Structures are given as structure tokens and as C-alpha cells.
Image (cartoon, rainbow, N blue to C red):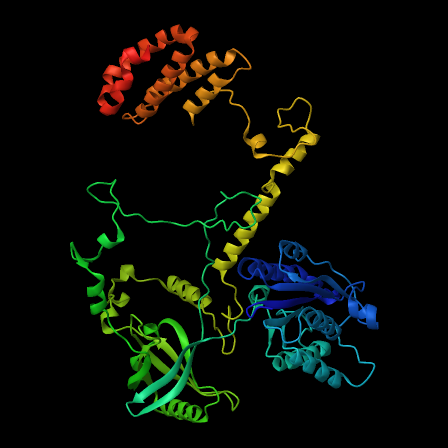
Length: 625
């Protein structure tokens, strides 16, 4: 298994207590599957239901028990079939509990993944926790929980659980079964480095179901220099990172449909032309960069650019300390990073803790000059804010935020509303309405209560993009996807008699000549000269010569009548030359040219003579007739 690959089991409770939530759970899981199809198409996903009316799993067949658990889809690479399977869940009335379902899911992962395989292995459980866990036949429930948790840890399987607890549900929080199940699930999640999410709204449910866990990577490893003689070993991680829109690439369908080695990539080649003569290409060694300075461009050679380049060395240096009030939050820029002590370095841990607690006691923050990597073009200036651990198991650390340089600050002064005349002052009702509007946008109306938490709220822009992407693909599927030639030819068997369809003789192989050998029957506007010559070459009937000449007459007439500033003259002359050449070959038809020539000579001397001289020899009467 690849290191960045994930094996995931979706474990969904479809029992009676989950019936009001199943439609929303299906939408959340469908969004998860669609994200995997777009971003992680090599991940493997399985789907297991518990609380079903029947039983379909290997453990039940081998050992007995594990009833009301159905393996709807074994572990396989994520696909459109899985996306269709999770569009809607059936409501059933089984009585199985999540403990047995977790054993079945773990068994599927262990059998699928070889021992020591790399990559994430995860069970994603969605339930309301209302079904009580059955007492084991041997031992106690606590012993069973401990045994299952140890098995999950041994196989490096992470358990992420989503428990639906909507506000306003009568008795949901007082249920003894729900409280016990929450305690057990939290024990499993903590023991496997997983996550337990209590969902209080369906909007939160959509954001709580995450496609995969992302392992953090360090942005910087090295010294935090306090003085030239004192430094602390630190590691820097990104605390938050904005999720970007998926990158879409141009796809080329020029390759043959049956070519399995085609990459369908589109490559761009940039060619520079001379501004004096557009037909002359400029070689790379003849080009030089120029930078705009005022109204002019200043050319800078590569050697000069290298000499003027600002050199930086990797490192973090504390510039000084200042009061927190001097760095307001609206100065913070970009994303937040976390400074933590070096792993398994006791001295670094003690130094970071002492510095953070001293700064917190004095109400200070540190200004830091940052160069994350050697040769970095820009130097970052940031502020370190101490963050003390809530208990002994959480180490002290620093939050880092980029702040602007003095040249980047722009302050704008606005006149006070109090200085406005009384006619422009709001009335009491208007002021109350404005205050109510502001209060409605407060995401933390009460201490300890937060709406639209970033960790549990889906990005509406990304969600809309994925839904539209899914809609476009489903629409194309309904209209009918691309068909191979063999499929199209196979449809001829069901065609109605008399339809003008391609026919192929029985027993003969399908060849390129057969597919491209359809004979020309009229002069088209795309390639009129080729069509004209093809019609003259046909010998199966005498009508093709007359049809070719009449068709070419019409093409030339249309080209001249639709000309705008002479844009079609060149093509008209080319068609006229081909017509003259064809009529010379077809001697009996020469007389049919005279009416057309009278029309053309009017245009030749008035219009064509203004064209390039290279066309003039083609227009002499002696050459045409």
C-alpha cells in the first residue's frame, strides 16, 4: 500500500433510531465519496451497515453471531458505483450494536491490508448511539472494550466516530444507552488517535464527515535565536491551512480511443516574435528580461539579476519584545503557525515553557525575523504569542502570525457619525434594527457556545464546486457517454429498414479505410477544392461532373458576396483556379464556364487586382479559357 493511500470502512447505523437522520447521513457520506473521487482516486473504501434486517458478513458465516450486519460493498478502489450506492440508505429494523460492527469492519481491513503495509487505515462510524451494547457471552463489557481497543492499536487502525445529537431532541442526552455509548466511543477514539464528534445540527454533520486525516509536516526545523549566544531548538507546523480549489487541467481527445498509452496532456510552447517583423522568431539567447520602471522598461541580464538578488540564510531570530496591545489582531496576515519544542528534547521543552510563561506573565509578545528556507526571496516578519498548555499532557508553545512592515501599512481616517447633523442621525428604531443585525452575526453569543465552528463547517465554495462537478458528470452520463466505433456499428442491427447507416460485410474486419472511405457527394465550404476534385474523379455516374461545377460556382459566388475587406478573396481565387483546371480536363463542359466568367471578370479587375501581385498571373483570360 502506498504511503499516502487510505483504506476506509464507512460504518453506518441504519437501525430504527437513526431513521430521521439517514437522509442527511447519506448526503454527508456522498459528499465524502465525491471528494475522494476527485482528490484521492486511489483510496480504497468499503461500506458496512449495522442495524439491518438481515445478515451478510464473513464473520457470521465462519464463527456465527454478528447478526444484522451487512457488508454492502467490500473494500475496493473508490468509484462511481460506490457514489451511487450511498445516495440513499434503506431504513431497517435490526438490533445490532456498534461493537460487533467494529469487529466486522476491523476484520475486513486486516484481511485486505497485509501486515506492515503503509498508509492510513480508518473506520468511520456514523450513529446516534441510542442502541445499547449487548453484554458479552464471556467476560465483562470493559474487558471486551479493552481487547478491541488493543486490536485496533496493534493493526494501526484509527476510529473516527460521528454521534448525532440534535438540539431539541427529547431525552437524547438523558438516555442511559447514549451516555454509555459516548463513553465507549471516546475511549476507542482516544486509544486509536481518532476523533469523536458530537453533531448538534445537520450543517455540522456535513462538515464533520472528513474525507481523510492529513498528517502534519514541519515548515521549519532549526534554531530560534534569542541572542547570538543563546538559541532554542524548535519545530514549526502550520496550525491552519486554507483548502484550495481543485486544479483542473486541459484534456486532449486527439489520441485514438483504443490507445491505452495516451496521456491526453496538452503542452504549450511559447514562441517570441519580432515586433518589427512578425514572421521572425526570437531565439532564447537573443532575449533579455526587462522590468518596468515608471513609463520605461529597464533591461536586466541574467548575470546582473543574479548579482542584485537578495541573499538570505535559513533561520529564526527574535528582534525584540513588545506589549500585546502594540500588535492588534487586525495586523495578522496569512495563516497561523505553531512553534513547538524539538521532539524528545527536554532542554528545548523546558526553555520554550519558561519563555512562554514569562511572556504571558509580563503581557509581552516577541517580534521575529523569519527565513523558512535558504535562498528564500522574501523575509517574513511575525509575532510570537505564548500559548500555555491546559494540563500537564499538553506542552507550552507559541502561535506565530505574519505582520506587515511599516511600508505595508495604510491607515484611513473616517469621520465620526456623531458629527453628522441631526437629519442624518438614525432614529431609535433604526438603531435598534442595526444593533439586532450585528448581534445576529455574532458566532459566539454565549460563553462556550460557538456557531459554524471551522473544524465542523464545510467550505461552501468547495462544496458547491463538487456538487456542480457531480451534476455535470451525471448529466453527461444521462445524455450518453462517448461510444466506440464497434458499439456504434453494433447499433445498426436494430436500425429500421431504409435508414442511411454505415454497413459492413459479415466476416470482414473493421478497418480504418472502411471508416474513412465514405465518398464525397457535394462541394462543401470547409475543403471545397478537395471535394471538387473528388467529385470529378468519380466514375460511377455522369451527374457528378455537372454537380461539381455547379457546387464550385455556388461556393465562389458565396465567398465573393460574403467578403469583408477582402478576407475571402484568396480562397475564392484558389477555388477559381481549381475550377478552371477541372474544366480544362473536362472538355465538353468548358462552355458552361462562360456565364460565370462574365460575372467574375467584373470582380477581377475591380477587386482582385488590389491583392498581392502573386495572384495576378492566375487571372489572365488566356489561362482561364
